[in-house]
Image (cartoon, rainbow over all chains, first blue to last red):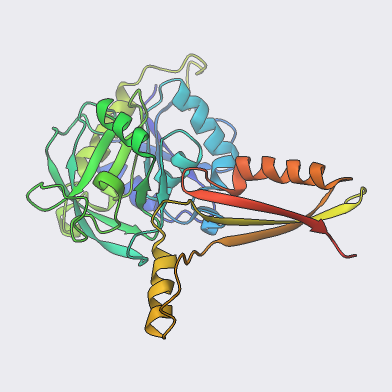
Length: 247
Length: 89
């Protein structure tokens, strides 16, 4: 049996219970995976790397976390096609690990930002976005000091032509203006809020969909993203190395 | 700790040239507001210092280069500069 959403717990992460709750209300099962674990559970169908401040963001956000055994296990699984979503610090870890292009630099306004933003879905059909349509506008909170997506211009061009941009910061009506400090508050290049790898199975985004899964929290717009990943986990083929029974 | 003679490494890591440096820019404006209006090119980085066992400066520098490429700097957003010296001990 597959279908488990693995949630790696790297020291300093602080969104793991939000993620587990969101996975539960999206109809999925999850398990916390210790940072020293060298393999994911056999029944793992997807990975959701939560936000926080892994290793205190010492050196750079994600720089030390990427060398933990669990992240190396995630990298191996990702190479085999495992759906992986990294949110906020999880996105930074995936960039540092080289699983996603670009880097997250200090916000242009230098301030830590904790607020709702709007993002426009750019690429549907990935494990993290198949329950949405391109052009959908979602209101989801951000919570970061280093979220300014940065990459060389030629890499940004490639991301656009290869449909690797997952979400962009936008105004409430879906208008994208990278130069607008209101709708693109951290100054991300081309207003990029999330990207995928070339094959689309690895995705990262700075906004926290798991914090916008219920109306009582002010928005349920993030829920289709969590549901997409949960569904992808449940429909993933059983890994070749998995034992018959799992757990 | 090191059994071979130690060299003292100082790695300075800064925002990559050409990229926006909002922190440096904020300091530039603060300096200008305090009267230092001729200041430009303000950048803030971080310094990592350590002693490494190596017989020669070149060997120590090669070690530090490898560390910068592997973990100390992110080439997408950062430049680095390595200075090799003696530990003074």
